[in-house]
Structures are given as C-alpha cells and as structure tokens.
Amino acid sequence: MIYISRQEHFNAAHKLYNPKWSEERNKEVFGPCANTNWHGHNFDLIVTVKGKPDPETGFVIDLKQLSTLIRTHIIDQVDHKNLNLDVPFMAGQMASTENLAMAFWKILEPEIERISPARLHSIKLYETPRNFVEYLGE
Image 1 (cartoon, rainbow, N blue to C red):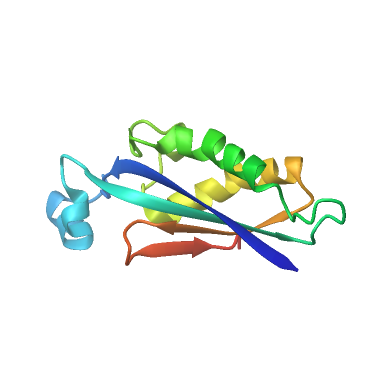
Image 2 (cartoon, helix red, strand yellow):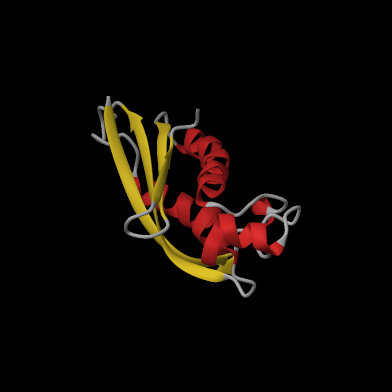
C-alpha cells in the first residue's frame, strides 16, 4: 500500500462559542477563541490517499486531479471566509478544527472515489504550526 499526500492552504476566520452557555463560560472554555469579533488562522490541509500504483502511470492518484478536487470542493468554499457564517456545510456546527476535518472527509471521500480507485486515508488540518488534528474517517 502506498500513501500519497497533497497539501493545500487557506485562510479563514471562526469563533468557538456555545450559544447555550453564558459569556463567562464560553470565555472560560474557549478563551480568546470565543472573541466576539472572531479570529483567523492560516490553515494547512493535508489530504492523504492510499492505494496501489496504476501499472500504466505508476500513480496511486493523479496529484493534479486531486489538487483540483480539493481546491474546488474545499478551498474555494472556505478560503477567506468566516467558517461560522459563510460556509454552508458548517452551518449549525461548532466551527472547531475537529469538526472541520470531519466535514472535509464527508465531502472528499466520495469525490476521490469518483476519480480514482485510491481511497481517502486521512485528513490532517493544521490550525497553527503547533495545533492540528488528524481524522481517519473513524
């Protein structure tokens, strides 16, 4: 099994805030991430697929096609957007990096299967250089 990854980048704002809680509780749990006026991140997204190389091309997946798919279905939807307000697939959810990674999986998995016999292996999403999540679809 070969694992191959494509990295993309986007900028987005969000706020972590539970409307069922008081302002004090939100600040206690989420700190500056509950800022009334939002806050932003420079996200790095790494999509890893797995499979066996095609005998004719040597590719597990055509990275140009994978990049186009990620840009079309994810990056164009979230780049320079407010994740809480501007992104329909995040409506009604806490705009945490964890939930964002799971939403990306739901979008990308069928799209990857449509263009390749490769399978989505993981979504790694860096919110900062030190804070990231990895989702394996489980």
